[in-house]
Length: 116
Image (cartoon, rainbow, N blue to C red; front, side):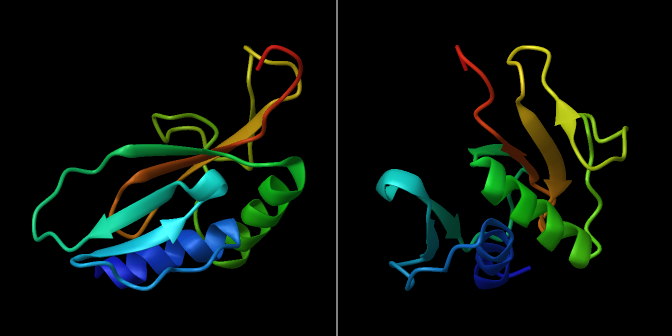
């Protein structure tokens, strides 16, 4: 998978856009001017990335994942297939896991109740 395709996948799921390339990276700007920069590497280890999203953004992202036929998991071990999990640590928090085309484990989660 190319850095542009991986960046576009994440941007599409989160309802964002891909920024112009900077040197050898393709950035996707998230909240508060934070970016996830996709580097063009031949060899890398998959990692876990979590994104806190609003309830509305969560519902939209889940809908995009389902529409794209992407498997959603309810646990980080990717054993429980399902739409979302409910966190035991914060009342009302929802989340879901999915793999991007490069095998990275992506997580979307809502802020939840007080203390989260």
